[in-house]
Length: 134
Image (tube, rainbow, N blue to C red; front, side, top):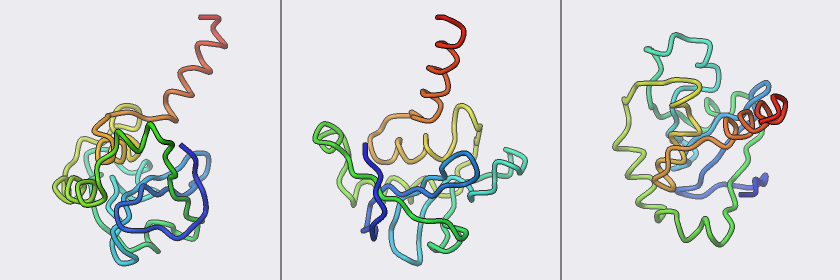
């Protein structure tokens, strides 16, 4: 998956840099981005964080937008833009946030690919295993 700065379109997976991590969402329009919490929500109690919708400004909070550009294999695995947005909308209000096991990147990958994964956490685990010699 490549990430590029460009104008998103309906159903795109988007992200913005927040401190040392990225915050992810599904782009519907300038007025609607569906995301698991807001970029600063990891500082809130997990039980208060929900899948919600906001405008692009609230999503970015002054940051830059990046749009996912999937490779050929990823394009075959992903749903159509309509399916992605419908899946995200169906999850509005959902809770269960966990920074390690159920975060905004997990949410977006679930909506786009039907896979509950986080590249960020996979990289952290890989780095820890390397450091531990495993």
